[in-house]
Image (cartoon, rainbow, N blue to C red; front, side, top):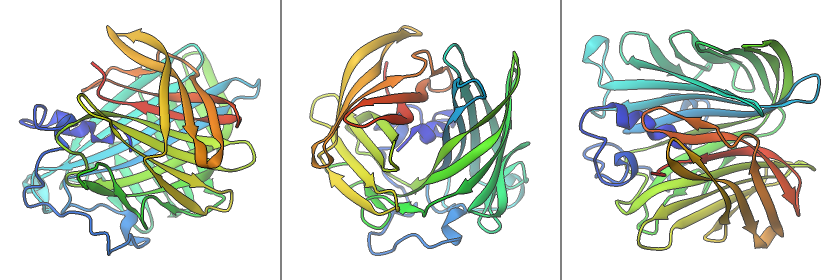
Amino acid sequence: MNARVLVLLCLPGLAHAQGFAGLGGEAGGFALPDPSVAPAFPDDHGAHPDYRIEWWYVTANLTGPDGTPYGLQWTLFRSALAPREATGFASPQNWLGHAAVTTPESHLFTQRLARGGIGQAGVEAAPFAAWIDDWRMAGPDFDNLDLAASGPDFAYDLSMSATGPLVLHGEAGYSVKSGKGQASYYYSQPFFAVEGVLRLPDGAVEVSGHAWFDHEWSSQPLSDRQTGWDWFSLSFEGGAKLMGFQLRENDAAGYSYASWIAPDGTLTPYVGDFEAEPLEMASLDGVEVPVRWAVRLPQREVAVDVTALNPAAWNALSPPYWEGPVTITGSHEGRGYLEMTGYE
């Protein structure tokens, strides 16, 4: 699911629209996902300017030579003021980039803003390239990508190689987000092996590990009652993976979904069966945020504690949200990523 929608709050008039970050507002002439049409590749790795919002998202769990764990985020958001593309300053497309590195002791983050039509930011399907200024995710094909970003106090250069297939969430990529039927197109590449270099205030660190890529696009993915979400991408020892989210509502039970991903990439969807209960809170910028969770998927005998590597992984951007690496203990062991939006 993911906070990739944050770009909306950088655009005039959308910050106070219905639903979280305006995502519950009417589509207003933009395209809507069609459950009878599945994503097709490589074309759908690219941008979809007739949809209102879109994001390309990488999170990575990494390890240094001395065993220190690290987390990494690279995100490119697209938001449209109108359902079309154009060249020059006539383009209605707006772009936002977020990048972060998390260690057990620190959380470093930054952002970039751009507009469409002038080459400052964009996405090309084949060969794949996504960029904003000098930040890039690109390669000769989607199975082999280089990833780079930099901020005032960090930078990274990584290589990612796919070791498994793409997975389509929901029903063949049609991902329902509410009981009212709002939906997005949503697929992942959760099988990237990663190696490269982090450049941190204390020096360069060689790292390796695994990354999870998400691509999602829609025009009205939430209902007007939904206030935020908790999104988990969990990689278990043994090779299985779990993506689960719950969308919160102030005055009613929320909507939940999970994808169980077998080591060979086979996906089994579960609607309404994913459970996530906060166990421990942290106060960050005056906001109480859960940083330890009990996560359950009874059909797969999953009953785990999910704990933040660094509870202070708070992106103080517009709007602020929590995004960081987690450790997994209990019925399954492993590492993953957690994103939480809409906490006030």
